[in-house]
Image (cartoon, rainbow, N blue to C red):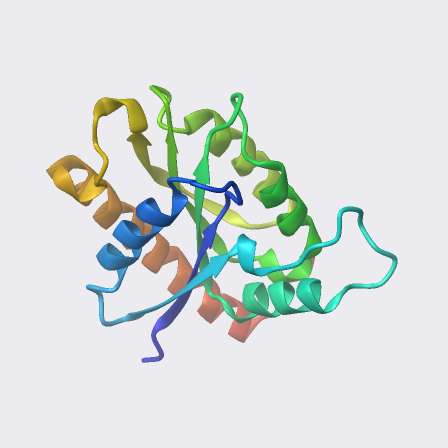
Length: 184
């Protein structure tokens, strides 16, 4: 069977972000599964324009290709002011059909809230794009003193549950899209 292609999207573009460390930890968890092919999509590597252009730029086309290639997604997002970062919303909006009928999971982080306010808002955005968000989330409280998320059995278990759900939905929806193209 072809491995499920998962794109792990780093949603923060801030200098000094915790997203790099959180993403490395999560990718390490995902790469323990032979049936998953993981790609990191770092928004800092795309030169997105400040305003939405009439025609897609090379960076926009490259990002959309990554979204199109993936069977499933994990969005690694911080919570800033009870929401997710603006560059993440901008990137999400550059693709449309490419998100459809694909599952999205979340690894979030923040201060005390573990980023769940951001996840709640992202669920609404991805639902509007006809993507399927998985139930369970990996939430990391940066104020809990966990500078390296792999320190806790609970977070490892949460990652395993998220990956199990993402794998199930990813395979089911990939088979479904192959048998019958999604129409919105």
